[in-house]
Amino acid sequence: MPTANDRIFYACQGVAIANHGKYHDKSTDGYVATNEMVHGLQSVGVTTNFSLEQAFELGQIEIYENIEGTPDIEVTMEKVLDGYPLLYHLASTGVTGLGATGLVARSKQRCDVRLGIFPEENNFIGGAGGQIQNANTANGGNAPAEIYMSGMYISSISYSLSTDGSSTESMTLVGNNKQWFKDGKGRLRADSLANFDGADEPLGLGSDDNPSGGIVQKEDVLLSGCILPATIEGITGSGYANGMGKAHLQSITVSTDFSREDINELGRKTPYSRPAAFPIEVTCEIEAITTSGDFVQATEDGDYELYTTVASGNNTSNDCIYIYTRNGLGLDLGAKNRLSSVSYGGGDAGGGNATCTYSYQNFNDLDVQMRANGYIGFRFLVDGNDKDGNGDQFPFGL
Image (cartoon, one colour):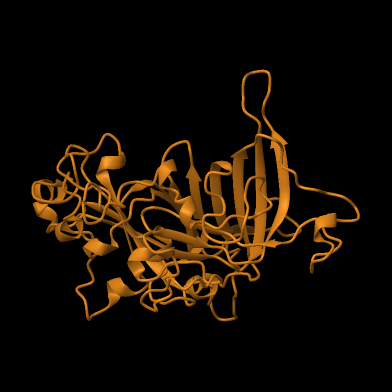
């Protein structure tokens, strides 16, 4: 760097995510491509643990050996939903097509992550006049300092849609390899950062031919394209738009944890695989301002309204959940979501509104879709609106 930074803040950091091994592929130059850079990133953190195990022996108080295990690297990131590729998709490239992009297929994918740190005195990190061009000619056009984390697995993902602020995606990655590079010896270079030129903005913002851009706000959760559980007071029907204007939704959070486990073998220090521990739980929490209560029955004999169904004697039954936003994000949780809890609260003397929070769970069923990838829609609903046969089952006009 031309001068030492006094601090590191948001304007002097950049993150790229690529398919595992891409940076060592001789068919490419090994440098970061512009479409591997993460847009809309709000935060990034890296934690390293060395898994020390102590051994003692009879006859002395001092430690016999402090055994170092495999280093454990954890990367956490959060971005706004802005029309650019999702963190989850960047970290699990190589799976395409309807039905092939669920948790099982994506859980097997690995990725490489690069975090570049740049001089703090410039307004942006790329483009003409950016930090690399102006400040780092001695580094051959590369980032002055860079962390490289390879072979990372997706550990957890979460999507948060709320009336309070912007909608976000969070992701945690885990792995066993981290390297620091300095003096321009990394792979983030000027042309990798071309779009970070001080004029970067959410995809489609202000565009007449693509008005669905911008960061997703409360009005961009399109209830006309959602399918919500009928157990929520005010929700009726079973198809798209069954919650439109009938339930006063405040927030929706969808998340899952892959619960990775190390599989080791003799003759090797690092695990040869870190598969997801299926079955894995997918949760969906929906909060709504209530005008009458939650009206969820809970008796030891079960809900009498379910007596004629396959859930006879139970208080809950399976529900479909599908969430859709204006920027083309679809969250398909399938048709076997079960209400696990409901809570009623608020409306206190301090002036708050009473709310009901409904928590649902399924196992192994979460398909995170983007319309830009060529398909969108709830796969269990066939409504005759698939115009081109590509699995797009949304009502015409969305």
